[in-house]
Structures are given as structure tokens and as C-alpha cells.
Amino acid sequence: MDQFVFKQLAFIRQLTIKAVQGLSEAALDNIPEGFNNNLRWNLGHIYLVQEKFAFHFAGEPMQLPENYDRLFAKGTKPADWKDEPPTLDTLLEMLAEQPKRIHASLQNRLNEQVKTPLTTGAGLTLSTVGEFLSYSLYHEGMHFNTITILKRFADKK
Image (tube, rainbow, N blue to C red; front, side, top):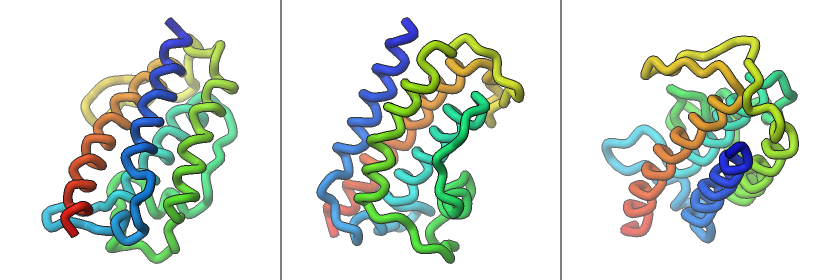
């Protein structure tokens, strides 16, 4: 069962990457009326949250550019950006590489207790490495749905 979590992480990540490959930088930055964020924000947010859920809580070093919290943390939005965001190619490269690092670092640690459990906004407490990874699948799935919706608006421009 442990290996299935890593298989799922790689699978959902490939879906996310395929959904945005070939889009223009302008399409990535389109924010339709009624939305706070764009495709670029969703991609960066997925990377940021996965990095924290996989590595930070497991006590491993993160590969996180210093401005990603300012750009992609919960509650941020492109309208407030003062930093230059990463290009699509940069985001795709980071997103493609991340599940491989997660598997290499955490493959035998899913039952390991984290030092600082986290209770999500919905009230679920995550206490093990495996719980964080499993929850990150749900998180990416939610943002994959948003990406699918935002792409429909981008295609109409």
C-alpha cells in the first residue's frame, strides 16, 4: 500500500502538468471575473503546499525559492505580487521533479510521526508523513479542478 501513495502522487502530478503544457504565459496569467487567482498561482501553490507537507513536516530540507511564500501561500493573489513569478517552464520542471524527490526521501517513512501535527482548516489532524502525503493528493485534486475551470476561460480568450 505504501508504494501506491507514491504512484498516486506521480499520477496526479502528471495530470496537472499535462493540463497546462503548451499554454502561453498570457493564458497562465489570465484571471477571469469572479476569481482571485490564475493558472500560474495554482501551479505555484500546489508546489509550495506539497513541499511543506512532504518535506517540512517530515523534518527534511525543502527546495523552495525564497519568494514562493509571498507569491503562492494561502491567501496570496497575483494582484498583490511585487516579485517576478516563475515562468511556466520553471514551474513545470519543479513540479515534475518534486514527486521523485518525495519518493526518494520518504519511501520508508509513511508511518513516522511528525514533530508538529497540523489540523487543517476543515478540522482533520495530520500526524504522520503518510497522512500529510495522502492529504496532499486531495489538495492537488482540488486545485487541478480549479486549473481545469481556469483553462476553459483561457481557451475563450
